[in-house]
Length: 356
Image (tube, rainbow, N blue to C red):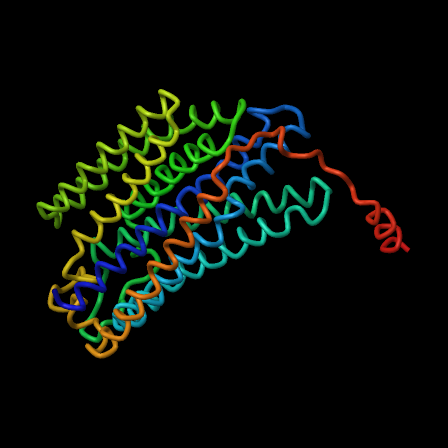
């Protein structure tokens, strides 16, 4: 197997890992105003405990999950520099919006608890919600555009604009990613919590899962009819079966199997994208002669050899460490584990000093 093909597969694996792991992070963030809102809890103190509980489910792992996208971007830059250059210049605005949203989301995780005022927390809650929704939507739009093809000229330059990317099929791709991540995140909340919030999260997962299943079938079949291969139809079928099995397990209260089902669904959906894409890395919608492929977009063979050696040594270490982290923080939580908000004794003095 050519090293260019190996690195195309590895980049696909990195994106798969990112969406499977960061997907439930995004889902939990998007569920913040739902499970932590007035619909499920009219008591302000209980609603606050619910939001803190949801944060605690992803608190030990969210930053590790984001490393996957950094690695995917770095691997793309090193292995396929022409792909990286065309992608990041043509998709500059969507990627910038994703970056800003992720920054605001991460600030919300880190700063929400710094002050006890509800107004302060509400602002960061909005940052967490929009910082989860926007990347989920735009990643789906971006990847769907890459698979379907965008205007690229003979100089490997993107010739469209931001409105070129906002076509119906790509927007559908964004909505599918949002629905899948919501389902994945709701099941993760059910898996990691106990008490009423667990049952409510399972109910949300069932409803969003049905929507995700219907939309995903439309999306993947549409992409398959355009450029599908036998193997991509197989992964599409596996994704559909896994989602149905996961929803069935969720209805029976077997959250572990349900989470495995949605994880396999997302993994197979991303695999379908990359299988349809290969051997291209970024096809041109204007002229097939301008397609960026694993050959004309790749780095030198020497560079790929060095990268392969480094990846073989370091990747197992990173995967084992992250798996260990999930094992350590595997216990369920409930609102009973969340203490009531206590205003620090130093804060009145600080506030008085600020007023004076």
